[in-house]
Length: 256
Ligand code: PGA
Image 1: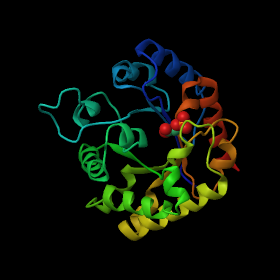
Image 2: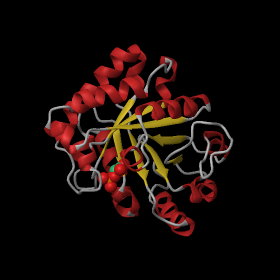
Image 3: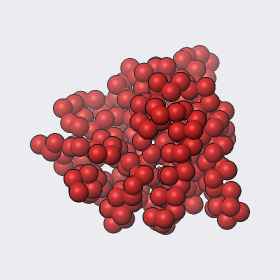
Image 4: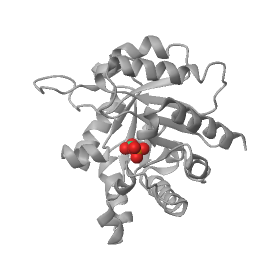
């Protein structure tokens, strides 16, 4: 049976009170469910501390949206992976296209962050994906290949079980226009092949999520694709009902 991870990326939304309410609502919808899917929420840093008591006893895991690669020091405004681990975060999203676009994160920085997340014993969700210009000029696979090659440079294959890749075409994020099933399956197949050739058979443990306007309506089609192991969900994860429906859909897909 394939592994599935349904991850909510709340981005810069919800204050700590709103985060608590949303997390409580999601946990409430999962009570007494024996989930086969893994479920994760990634609230803003300011909400991480209070999440532990809410998520305790639920199947929902806690993740952060970013980190710095140094353990501590004079990096005003930054948060280290050690600080996140102390708050029982199990996952960190790295290399999201918004960080690449607005905060100038390069593949080299993504690689440093990946090393530091894995060394701290946490799981990393590494985001990759092409812009619309790159797709239209037939550079999609070159871009994915480069992002994987540099982003995962010098990572030991024994860490594969702690790595998740999120394929997020930049043009599909927050636009309401998800990639088509054909585009997603083709990209995921390519990513899995690249991972196998870069890291060997251990790479079969790496889940590849799709992200970009996934919602309760298109989730079934996207999650059913052979090489899709879940979703990284932005907008729809801020609506408790929509996020729960995507989780239930993932369960249905796994049972089929
Ligand atoms: P979206 O965001 O679901 O709102 O498109 C996905 C993401 O950026 O991870």
